[in-house]
Image 1 (cartoon, protein in one colour):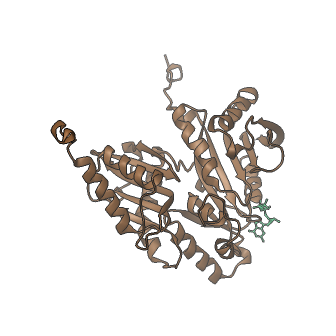
Image 2 (tube, protein in one colour):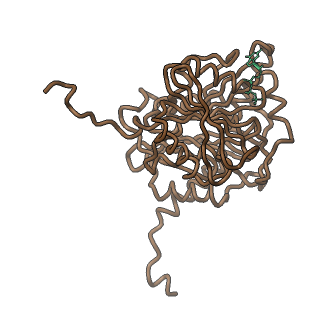
Image 3 (cartoon, protein in one colour):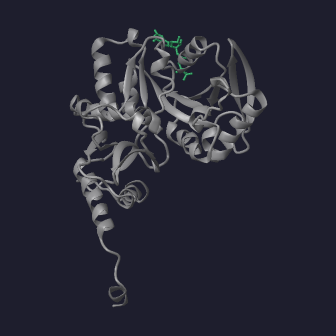
Length: 372
Ligand SMILES: Nc1nc2c(ncn2[C@@H]2O[C@H](COP(=O)(O)OP(=O)(O)OP(=O)(O)O)[C@@H](O)[C@H]2O)c(=O)[nH]1
C-alpha cells in the first residue's frame, strides 16, 4: 500500500469554508478590494455576498460566484429578511444549501454596506463553527478612506438606535481584525499618521496596512483565522504589541482600548462570572459613574494551567484552547485581555475581575447559615 491509499484525517475546520467580512464607509474602496481579490484568485471559486442591510428585497440577496475568472449570479434565499437581521441558522443554511446545489466554494467574501455595524453579522458566522457548519468566520476587514476617516469617526449622525453613541465608522474600526488604510495617494503624510494614531487608540489590537486602490498581498488579508485557536500566534503577537500602540496617542475619546495583564491563572467559574457581569449585566461603571460597554474583547488566558483564546463581540463570547503548535515564540505567551469599548478603565476592570475571583473562591453557604 503506498501513501496515497492511507486515509487522511483532516480537522473539520480545514474542510470548512472561510468567510471574510469586508466592511468600511461609503467609497472607502470595498468594491475595489473585492474586484482585486477576485482577479488575483481567479482560479478559485469565490462567493461574494452583498449584504444590503435592510434595503431592497427582504427575501433574496444577490450572490456572485467567481469560478476560474467567470462570475455568475445566484440568489441567496433568506426566509427571514436581510442576512444580518435573520436568525443565525437561516443565513448560514442558505449558503450551505447553495453549496449543496452549486458545489463547495473555496472562500466567501461578504461585503456590508457603508453604514453597517459588522458585529451582528459576524456573530452569525462565528457561532456556527460550534454547530459543525460548513462555513466559519475568518475575520473582519475594514477598509478606511485615509482622507475622510477622522471626520467619519467624529460624525454624530449615523449612530444606531441601541443606546450606544458610537457611530458606524467607530464600530467598524473597533471590530476590525485588519484595517486597510486605503487611498493614501490622496492624503497628506500628516493626515495618514494622525489617522493611524486615532485607529490604534480606538483598536489597540488591530493589524493596519496602508494601501492604494486596495492592493495588498492576499497572504496578509485572507486566512487570518482571527477567531480560531489555530490563528493564535498572530493574535498573541498583536496582543503583545498592543501596549505600545496605546502609548502612541492619548485622545479624549470615550471609546478606547484597555489592556489588562493577568498575573495568575483563572478558574473557569471566575472567568464566566466576570464575562457575565461585564458583557450581559453591564455592571461595570467608570469613575464618573457611566456604564462601560465592550464592543470587542480578545485575550489569552491561563485557565487552570492551559492557555485559552478568549474572544467577544458585544455580548457573545467564546473560549478555545490554544493548540501547542499554534503558540507564539518566547515572550509572547504573556496572559492578558484587551478590551475595546466605551468608558473602560483598567482599574475598574481589574476590580470587577478580582470581585469575581473572590466570589468564586468563597465556599458555598452551609445549611446552618442558610436556615438562619
Ligand atoms: N485615488 C484613489 N481612488 C481609489 C482608491 N481606491 C478606490 N478608489 C476609487 O474610489 C471610488 C470608490 O471605490 P469603491 O471601491 O467603489 O468604494 P466602496 O467602498 O465599494 O464604496 P460604496 O460601494 O459606495 O460603499 C472608485 O471610483 C475607486 O476607483 C485609491 O486608493 N486611490
